[in-house]
Structure formats: structure tokens, C-alpha cells
Amino acid sequence: MFVIASAFTKEYHTQAVLDMLKSIPDMTWTPAIPARFQGMTHEAVRAHLMPQAIQQVATSEKVRMVGAAPAAFSWLETKPECMVVRDQGQCGSCWAFSAVGPLSDNRCFSGKDATRVVYSEQYQVSCDSSNLGCDGGYLAKDMAFLKKTGTTTDKCVSYKSGADGVTRKCPTKCDDGSAIETIKSTSFSNVCTGEESIKNAITQGSLQTAFTVYSDFMYYNGGIYTHKYGYVEGGHAVTFVGYGEEKGTKYWLVRNSWGASWGEKGYFRIARGKNECGIEQECYLQIA
Image (tube, rainbow, N blue to C red; front, side, top):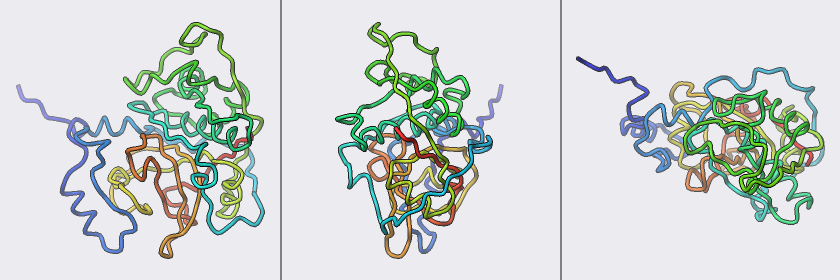
């Protein structure tokens, strides 16, 4: 009996692809095989992404944010005490991390929470029936859930789906058996109406956004990412937290949900002003 191994069961990263990426001239980012994905199969790597498109649902009317945004801005510099990198693990729940994270951020930025509170991604993964748990979600639906239903704290309902990729049932009590108390966002707006609108929105709070992930992004180690090689691997929702320019290349500063050991201490930069991989297509500012 012969068994032909599927491409998805083989190790994702290869030295040949890494060498090819390193040979591309004028690269603005550094490729490597991230320790996060070392030895993982294609299937395991793809589990960090969402298998279906995440920017196809009709969204609310877009809002243009106006003002005199500074040339560069970063919440990592402005409010470092409010910034936390989380880890979604082996669950396609980036949609929840990129929604709940900004809610936590913006409550800290505004002083609604005296210190940074980690709110529960697990509660949204398990309880937001308009989305698909570990199989992905949609940005506008994320925002609507947090406005209508809200979420609780991670201390109440801790994150568990990352360990096994299982969505789990919506909890009716906190992990310790106490009653669940929720907080909600006040409102949300789709502010992806051009580079200046996004810049002005970022100065008001961190933003949920999403982009198309190609094979080469999974080799990202640092620098300003632009797509150079590979196929579409899936969709991924992340968080705009700043912007700037380096050696003449404009970038967005983005928080990922793959832990602090990935990329630039859990963050990455991506080319700004050209809708690189669709990252400027749809993004949301929540008012906490």
C-alpha cells in the first residue's frame, strides 16, 4: 500500500524559498523561517489564518476622518502601558483578537480603564454566532457584536481555543463559576477612505483591519513588508497601531496576534498608501 503525502502535511517552510526571497534585490523586509513556525506543516501554519475571504460582507457607510495628522504616530510610543500582544494559537480567531484588542486598547487610551484590561477573545469566539469561531469571521460582524452584546474579561473567560483549534460552546458563567459581566463598545465606523483618513483615525485609537496573506508573508522577520512571491494562503485580521516612514518607504505599524516572539516583537510594518494586500480596504475605529 502506497500513501502519497499531501502538500498540506509537509513542512511549510523550505530553505529553497528562503534563499530565493533573500536573493530578491531592493527588499525592504528581511525574510527568515520564524521560530514560531519552525517545523510546522502547511496545515498547521494555515490554522493561524482564516480560510475564507473576510472582506466580502456589505459594511456600514464609510466615514472620512479629517484633521492634521502628524507625519508619524505610534501608540507604542504614546501609550506603551496600554499595548499588549496576544497569541491566538492554533485557531483561526484573528477576527476576534483584532476586534477585542482595540476595544481593550481604546478603553485604556481614553482612561475608561485605569490600567490595561485584557478582554476576552474567547467569549467572542464562542458566543458570536454571526461568525465562525476558529474557522474565521467578518470585520463588520465583529464590530456589531461588540456594540450589541459586548465581551467580558479574559480573567472571567480565558482563552482556550488556541490550544486545540476548537471553538467551544458559549459560556454562561465565568471560569470560576461567578456571573459574567460584559462591557460594550459605544459605536464603530469604517474609516478606510484613504491614507489620510486612516492616519487621522489611528491618532484616535487602534483600528481593526485585515489583509490577504501570501506565502512570502509567512517568512516575514522584520522590516517593511511588500508582497514579492507566492500564493494566497488565506485572510488575516490585525490591528493598525501607528504609521511612519523609513528610508523613504512609508509604512503602517500593525499588531499581530501570533505572540511577542514573532516579527518585530509581535508587530510588523507594511507598505502604506498603496493598499498593499488589501490592508487599506476595510478598517474600523471603535469608540469605547
